[in-house]
Image (cartoon, rainbow, N blue to C red; front, side, top):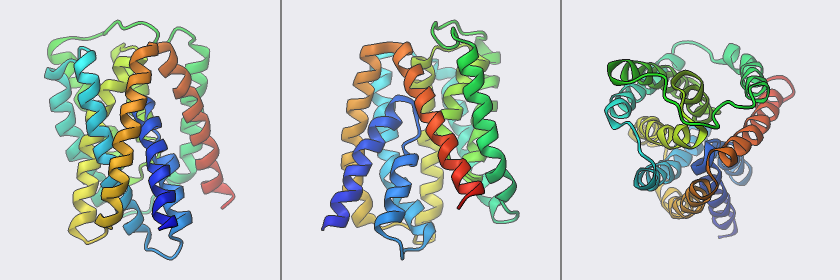
Length: 253
């Protein structure tokens, strides 16, 4: 009972952080591995997705009520993310992800430094593309980051946010709102794969899902209340923690 309470609390906090800027897996996945050290990794990853998908879907719905989103670009992009995630999951079964594991901290460091140097980045919402061009760019982001999520995964939400800001000219609030839809698609893709192979503890995932949605509700409201500057600050903190976590996993673990 204490184990379930612990991971449920972690899921609440993960949903809160994930709703603002992504990175919920940074909290929930280590908690699952700590509480259930003897479980198969695939089962813990699948159980994580079984909870997280509800939080990202709820956040998408909440943002959609308050933020004007380019659905004509985002819906095809979500489809591209879904396909990309399937392709990434297939690829990781063919080749090792060790090279990416070691490169990831440096990629994230580049993202962090670029964000810090460009102090105006993502503070104003000035879309750089429209119509077919915006759809094409969004689909490209969805496919590439979706593939990454299926292949490896850490920081997926943060990569979505950064690329929407950098390549499409969104502010951090609109980027985070857009990222939630695509992240929901990649989570669904991964969940389907894990569920198909029996790697989901549904009795744990469903309890964590309720907490994840509650955390998502709180995080979304906070982001909407405080705007792009607040989301940018949380983004910097989350990416910094991701650098520390992925660096430790790649070189010290």
